[in-house]
Length: 232
Image 1 (cartoon, one colour):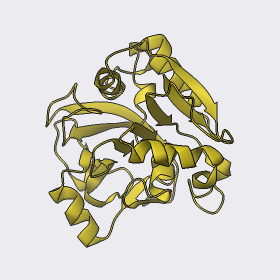
Image 2 (cartoon, one colour):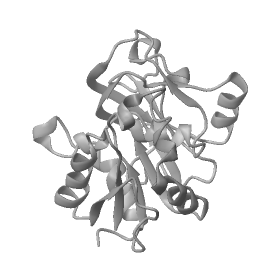
Image 3 (cartoon, helix red, strand yellow):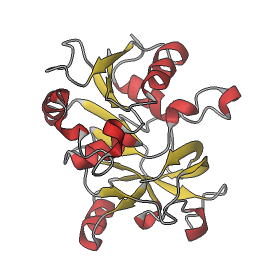
């Protein structure tokens, strides 16, 4: 079972459950943030997009103190797979489960658009359905999506293969013009050193049906399902 943590202000939680359950056939359920523990049958944890706690103080900064997050940390420390999307990525960074921080976009405006992403790391559990160099087309919608890390920290991330996705153009070229929010190194998705925690700003759950503009999001969500033995 995939636990989709629902914070006050989450607005992509049900979309994520729909994508996992109705499109991909996996068991996915909402888990309220005030629960003291994840359900015992949890096989993977998903932190959805939205505006947890209204983004007060800083995006994701208050959600890290929700009761269930203590068990999410325990789950991750034990090697469990954790995926954070948009606000979920922000929560993971604020919680210290991922390095770096998400800060306001370069133009200080909310951005809602499709972007292209180049796969930098193609491996289980999050990108095994892709190959290095593949270009995915997935939407973004955020105001605080500019990934930041210090020069030394970012160099370490690159050396350790922790940069999973970069913003690029349709041909896979990583350029300044293809960077929608000013993220350092065009970074769109980062994993922890162990590889079991992954955060990205684009929304794969909104790219699972042709009617929504494409199905490239399945490459990410499907990879996670594959890593846990398939949809069951």
